[in-house]
Structures are given as structure tokens and as C-alpha cells.
Figure 1 (cartoon, rainbow, N blue to C red):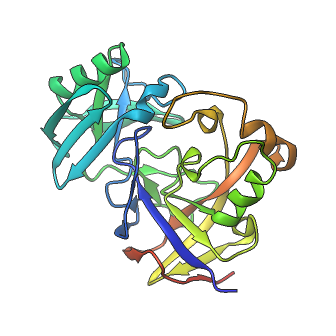
Figure 2 (figure 1 turned 120 degrees about the vertical axis):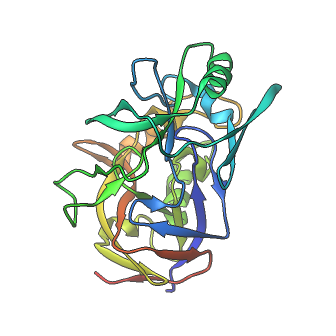
Amino acid sequence: MTIALSSLIYYPIKACRGFEVPAWEVERMGLRDDRRMMLVTPEGGFLTQREFPKLALVTPTLDGDRLTLSAPNFDSLRLSVQRSGVTVPVDIWKSQGVQAVDQGEEAAQWFSDWLGSPVRLVHIADGYIRKVSADHAVHPDDHTGFADGYPILIASEEGLADLNARLETPVPMNRFRPNVVVRGCEPFAEDTWKRIRIGGIEMAVVKPCARCVVTTIDKDTLVQSKEPLKTLNTFRKQPKGAMFGQNVIPLNGGRLEVGMSVEVLS
């Protein structure tokens, strides 16, 4: 059975819409420009669809350093992304005091108006190393941007099909917000992988991804239900939660293209 890369998705702003691309560059930090930006409270605490499901409707289109923010029935905003300069400390999960660059008043006002609450848009400072958990790192300098904890999330189409066969109403892959989707393997085969290679990029598969209530939000209608989390808990539950997908650390940079073969090394 040949395993192939079937989808590549990157998310310019954490919790906002992602973009499927036919090919993309990969850095040690993850897919280029993936979740380098996020929304924070005025005090610097990170925000997601848990607090603001409406973030799922925001489309952040990135063209080099030009960012366009758009949302349904809402005026768009174009701005230049600031990747370096004066930094502010922000917190995300156990990472405290991450250095980030505030994206200015216009971006803050746009998001604050959309969400109905004061927020700021920040970009992780160029050169800042937010290390992954030492418990699962391959190298001491393994790092990520504003992903929850690891540079890349991988999932299989077969795993989603297995889940959907158990659901009354199937859900799309975007409920799980992966970066790399593969096909041609057994359901949840990624759980058994330790090292894979796609193109010239070797990756360490380090940790299953525990799923949260974000998966229960329809990304188009914002309707929230108990699924698919309720069903996941019936057959994918581990002590730390219901698992779907695997966290991955790229061991070198390169370029991925949809259709590339996935080689399981161990």
C-alpha cells in the first residue's frame, strides 16, 4: 500500500481559517508562516475558538508581508505584517513570556470589533525560540510558533473515514485543523509511526494530539454540538484525552508537494 501526501494546510493566524496549498516550504519551526500570529487579550493571554468561535470565520490572506483580514458581511482590512521590532511578552499554554511583535491599532480594532471584545494581534518575534516540551523533543532546540505545542499536526484520511462511519453526521477534516493529511494507510496508522520521510524531509512523530471542544464547532455555521468529541471518546480515549492525529517535529527543512510519497522509516 502506497501512502501519499493528500493535503497541505497552513494557518497564518492561530484559530482563524487555513489555506490548502499544492506545495509549501517547511522549516524546523513548521510550515512556513503557519500560526506565526495569534490573538491575545490586552494582558497577553492567548485566545482561540474556545473563547471566540467567530474566529473560525476570519480569512487571513497572506501575500509576503501583506495581510488581508476578511469576514462575512464585514469590511476587510489590509496591513503590513511586522515580524520584528519592539516586542511584548505573551503567554500560550505553559510558554510564558514569549516575545511577540504587536501588529498595531488597526488590526487590534478590526478584531476587537469583529469579536466584540478588546484583543490584540501579535506575530512571534523573528529569531525567538519557543521550545517544544523537553519530554518529546528530538533536539534541544526543537521549536514552534503559536501552534499549541508542536510544529506540525499530521492526520490520515482513513482515520477520519473510520470516525465518520461511527457518526450520524460526518464531519470534515477541518474540524481537526491538521497541517499534513495523508492517504493510503490503515485508519490511525500514524499512531504507530516513529519516523517518516516525505520528499527530502524527515520527521519525528512524537505525540498523539488530544482533542478539545474546538472540534465540535462547525467552521462554516459556528453551530456547536457534542460531536465528534463524544464519539471519539468511545474508541480513542487515553488518560490525557481523546486522540486524533499526531504531533510531528521536522528534523530538517525543505519543500512538500501534494502527491509525494510518505515513507515510514520506523
